[in-house]
Image (cartoon, rainbow, N blue to C red):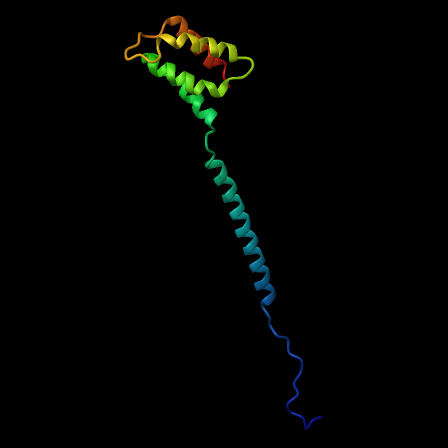
Length: 125
C-alpha cells in the first residue's frame, strides 16, 4: 500500500446547504406571515359604508331650514329603514309632506312635523 500515493484519508467536507435551506424556509414563513397580516389589515381599513349607514348619516344631517330638502331626503333615505314596526309611522309622515312636494316655493316645516321626523330618525339603527 505504500506504493499507492493517490488514495487519501477521509476528509470532512463543510457543506452549508442545510443552513441555507433552513434560512430560506424561515424567510419564506416570515414573508408569508407578513403578507397575511397586511392583507387582513387592508380589509379592515377599506371597509366601505353600507347604503344604510350612508342613508342614516344623511338623515341625521338634514337641514331643517330647507323644507324641500328635508321632505325629499327623508322620503328617499327613510325608505331603507321601513319595517313592520315603523311602516305606519313612516307612511303618516309621508302623507303630511303633501304641502311641501311639487311646489316651487314651500313654507318652512311645522314644528310638529319636524319633531315627528326627528323622533323617527332617533328610533333608527
